[in-house]
Image (tube, rainbow, N blue to C red; front, side):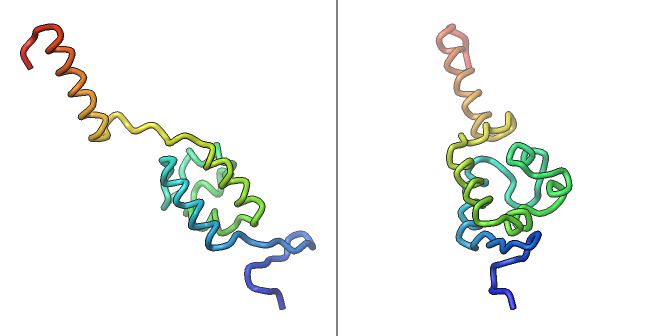
Length: 110
């Protein structure tokens, strides 16, 4: 009987990612601006296949080995946060304040 957390892959033992790794990767994905529920095209840059990108993020993470998850975590730690969308309220507020500041400089009423 195989120990929990291990799978047989091509005749070799493969230690699956730990729950701690999965939780940490999920937090890093969220911080980097990725969806943490459903896969999408953005996951291609992280190595997800087209088939994997049609599923749930948690399932994709659970299918990774300890080594694969370690590499993913290292990559996410090095990554900058994803830029905010133009319709994000924070971006809109910043644009409005910059527009008002430019109007004030130009002597126009706001």
